[in-house]
Each structure stands twice: as structure tokens, then as C-alpha cells.
Length: 449
Length: 100
Figure (cartoon, rainbow over the protein chains, first blue to last red):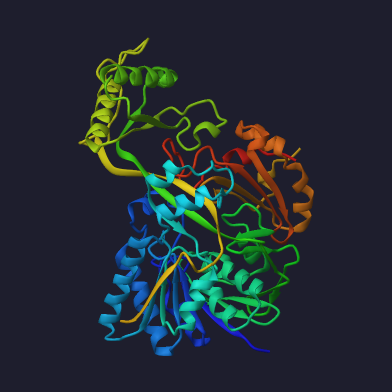
């Protein structure tokens, strides 16, 4: 029986890994090293602004060891959702670090770069053809939203990465990619079962988070066979248990039995998990159910303005008892003073009342002290600064009914009290696009570096 | 009547993509899981979070992890204006009041 071995060094490129775990993985003679670099979890800013939520230094540290090991062993290194969000600036940022590392190692490599950006005019045409549909509780995509998007990416399936491997790429930097693809591309190319390869990738993409105790900055190893796969933690302090691996299937998804991706979904209804000696877990029985048409998931973000915030505490019980009315009244003062500026948003987070849960908060009784985060978002930073500052100074001296504390209503931890927080983005595309060719949207550049 | 929190090993919340919020309630063994799973209903979740039942998208029983998974519509897309919890990691507290 054949076996294909995959080393997943860390949950996110830049989150790090113990060198002892990585070495233990190399000692098991992997056929490929693959790592996912992305997530939508840190919110829309990173896709919108074209910046990574990880820092350059830790990403470079990880890449140094990964590139060195891959080139020495002549095995491919595959990086998915480069730079966190996988749009062109994120991919180019990652490629610049790869180049820097290659220079320092005095090495050359055949590098494949796969872009996943979706052209706005192309998407407008596809939208008019009825080839775009919402994914989950999302509104239909409008032409305005498409036009206003800063970056739109499509989540690639296996096909573009398999092509890069076929063309002999040693290092693959992929834009937005369905998380399991970087792990499953080589096995599927070699004829292994698609469902098992994808399911193993689904678990490997979070590395040692699927072990017990879990960690996002430690390695996990996968052995793929014809009829099953086996997972092994590489740090002696962790083991894979039936529960840790099965529980990971729940993480950040809504239905653990049905995991949709490009071209179809994984069906886990018949999946079995079995513990093996030595802290390993064997998995089998997963099926892949192809969709009739091939859909790619799109993600986009648009800029909504600029933000300024101010942080302050309130300890006066008389003020706390009427905080909602006071905030509403001060908002009105602001509106009255800036009648020509309608295009701003003012929001006050009230920690100690409902700062964490907002409208979902069932608890009505506030705490003895409140933390307020006053937030203005406006079309320019200057207007946001102005609105936040005016709201803050008005609230500081606002004379509410029954007030005893006439010197000031707010306790500021900082001087200056206001912080200009820069551009604000929101997710505005989370849709499915029907395509005829799974590779058509993704452009690839291969060259010797 | 007992509190679910007294027998559960994990009660957590997290985004499932930017538009959904998902809760995992995990139990230490099959027996506890079987005992509790049917007492977690859409009706109870809607009442705890003061939302319409239609906002509770699914309740899935996942035997391999002795887990019940509940998914609701996020009050707003992750990071939209008015956001309180970008990762959705601190929205579980009302579940500590669940009983069976």
C-alpha cells in the first residue's frame, strides 16, 4: 500500500513552530510541506487595505526554515492564501519575503505565483448573466457594491495548484485558496482519493490545533493511504485523540457533516475516527459529493470611511443609571452643531453594560463602572476627528438630570484622549460565482528566482 | 433540573465566516451527550439571545465529538460599523444559563 506524507508546520504562516517539532516532521520524510497563511477572522480591514494581519519578521522566520528544508529535500513548499487575505498586495508581499529568504540562502528555486483577484468589470458581466448568488445570510450582490470594492478575491480549488506542481514549481505562493487545497493538491495529482485528501487537508490546515492540548503554533503530520489517513502530533507534549480530531471538524463552520468547497462538498456522515497506538488517529469513510456546476467563493471589501476613537471611564452611579439617555442626547447635540455634516456615524461601546454582546446581551443590570469607547466614522479623517472630539467634549461636560459631579463626567486614561485610527473597511462581497473552468480566473506566473 | 455548564467540557462561540456565529457545546462522554443533546432547542437559544427563532440557522448533533453545534445569524457582518466582537469569541456567556 502506498503512502503520501505531508508536513503542516503551523496553523498560519507567521504563527511560528518549535524547531524540534519541525525537525521531527522532516525526519518522517514528507513529500510536501504546506501551510495556510490566511483567514477572514481578523475582519475586513486586511482584505480592504491590502495588508497582512501577520508581521513581516515572524513570516520571514517561518519561511526561512520552510524554504531551506524544501529545497534541501527537493520537495515542494506550498503556501495558500498568501499574506492573510490572498489579494495581489498580499501575494506580492509574501513573494518579496520569499525572494529575500532565497537571497540570504544563496539559493534559486522555480517559483509559481498564483493570483486570485477578480476583475470588477468581469464580475459585473457575470452578475448580469445571473452567475452570482449570495452565500448564507447575505444580500444579493449589487452593481454598486462590485464597483466600490477595493479588492475582490476568489477562493481557488485544487486545479491551479495542481497545474503549478505539474509545471515543476518548487515553491508555490497562492492567493486566496480553499484551505485544504495546499495539502491536497499533490496527493490528488498522484491519484489519491479526493475526499480523503481534502478531509486530511481540512484538519492539517490548522496544524496542531487538532491535537490535545491544541496549539496554533505547532506542527502536525499527515499520512495519506489509499483508504484512510492518519494524523500525528510532532511535539511529544501533544497527542492526537479521537476527540481532538473530531472536535476540530466543528471549528469555525456551521455544519460538521457537510463541508462545502470549490466544486463540491465533503460529506462526513460515514466518517470514522479511530485512535492508534502512539497518539495517532486514523480517519476513513469521508466522501466527496460534486456539485452539478462549479462554484467559487468570492470575498470582497470596500472602504466605508475613516475612524477616530476616544476611550474613557464612568464611575458616577447617577450617570451610569441614565447612560443610554445621556449618550442619545449628546449625539443630538453633535447633529445640531454639524447640520451640514450628515455623512458620519457615531457609535459608543459601553463596556460594563453591553460592550461585548451589543444587541445580543441578555443582562440588563450594568456594572459599577463603565468603559466607553466613543467612535466616529466619517468620509475623511478630519471629519472623523472633529465629530469624535466634539462628542467627547460635549459628553465630558453634559449636564444630565440629577447631576452632582459638575467638574466632568469622564475619566480619561490618555492624553491626547482621541486616537485617529485610519481607514475602515467592511466585507461587501461574500458570494458564489459559477464558472466553467476552475482555473480560468487564476493567473499564474512561473519563473526561476 | 441541572445547568448544562456543569456537565459540558467546552462551551464556546466563534465566527463561521463573516456572516454567521456558531456555538459549540461539547460533552466529556457519549452518555452525557445523549442525556443533554435534545434539551438544546431553537426556542431556548432564541430566548437566551433575545432573537427570532428564524435567526437560529441550525442545531446539529455531532456524535464523533460528543458535541451540539448551534449556528445563528450574526447581528452584523464581522467588522461592520457597530461591531463588538470581530472574532465572535465572547458571545457564549448566555449559554451558561442553559438547563436540562
